[in-house]
Amino acid sequence: MEALKAQNALGLMSNSSLQGVRAALIRTDGIDVFETQKSLEFPFDEDLADDLRRIHRHPENIATEEFVAVERRFTDFNFEIINEIKNSLKIPLDIIGFHGHVLYHRPTEGLITQLGDSQYLANKSGIRVVSRFRHADIAAGGQGAPLSPIYHMALSQKLAKPVVFLNIDGLVSLTWIGANGEIKGFDVGVGLNAVNDWVFKHAGQQTDYNGSLAAMGQVDGHVLAALMRHKFLAKYPPKAADKYTFLEKLENLEGLSLADGAATATSFIAEEIAYSMALYLAEMPSVVVVCGEGASNPTLLRFLRQKLIGCDVQVSEYYDIDSQGVEAQAFAYLAVRRLNFMPTSYPFTTGVSEPIIGGEIFNPEI
Image (cartoon, rainbow, N blue to C red; front, top):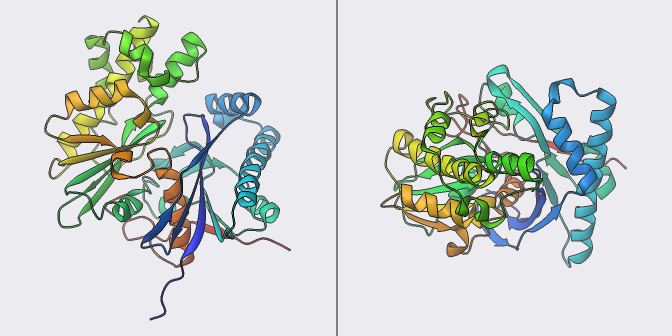
């Protein structure tokens, strides 16, 4: 059998927290990861962030011409990132894993809507693009998320098992890897969207920087209990969430002070994680690896360590893994797997009936 060719793959990730686009470069053959470079964040400019935020409020009512205009600006923003990175490299870029920007994700209805014109991006960059990673999985009856577990498996080779990878961005997804290589993945629920939406609405801040507001506030136990009474938390995996899954329930925060609301929302993230791990994992992990924006929130990390007694909770840098870049790296990895006709989702990650090769390939049109 001919050996698989290693590719220089760039992953571009934009999540529902609306902070910007994270770019990460890796070298991989879709099985092993030979090299990773430090990821870079490119914050949205204020106008694009406002447009994305407005579309997120009522995605089903957005006019076609407005959708197309915002999609083009978003795609151009990603092209500028590609150009900047490409011009700084001494090696060629072989492939781009383009996550796009998910507006809503309703797998039970077979629906997903994303921003990002992949053919336009391939044409402008001159580089092959793989995107629309979730669509084939949803069409086959899967949840369409999470898709990172197979990449977490590749990163976990030297870690003690069982291990959990927690990706905490706008949402929270979890990957459990057992001592014998068993794997399970699912969305836990809302992540930093709970905090970000609260502080933006009441203080005009993009996020609770370093968890400082939450650190000054008091957790309201009654509100926390109300937040935990959400039907998504009681749903057995596989399951996937989007920005709107918890939106109505988070109205329970109203009436709290700014700091108390931030503290309660942050505690809720840790509480739903601890609850889901206790309820849905075959065995509690010895190691919990925290990735994503949540790894930069000391208050959230403190709450997690208080609730996950007996687990060694560490940010992924402790294991020389770039916490902010893992998701972008994952989509670079998935892009190479798609090129090599390897599965990207499985019954034990998205609930699809059989392994699915996800993603569509867009070649530059000359």
